[in-house]
Image (cartoon, rainbow, N blue to C red; front, side):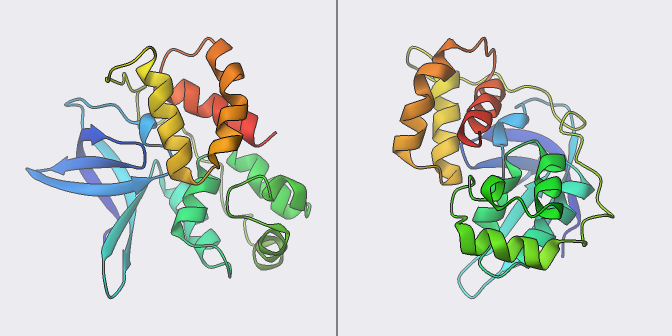
Length: 201
């Protein structure tokens, strides 16, 4: 089982990054790929390897604390890796843990794929079990991504694609699009962070 990968970011896509480790490219699914930049600066990305009959999948995290929070989430009945990544995409991990601690079901149901029943299960399974986790420092291991592409605003387009990849419904994303266009965002990560805040208000 892998603990982490140390290499360079070779490519960034809406739902994953490719990490080059000594000439081998690892496809790593991550909550917010645009936190990473394609360049030659080496990074360390913590990973979880899921093995099934049909696939071996790597999930990546900016630090050890984020990985531990992911592991706790996927142990909740009804939460799979994709749902856990969608929850972790919101950088307010401290707010997430506070919502679990205070039984704030309405906060939890704002995430894609999380209904009232699943939110209640998250609280039931994790309440009192997150005290050992510190909120992830989302600025530690990455630099802002300068996205390429074509169109009027390729950075915004990439952010929308990432929101769709996380499971947010197209109608909900379209609803916040006018507000996103008015933000002073400079990078795809800025747009994505702003979109997540609007969608989880």
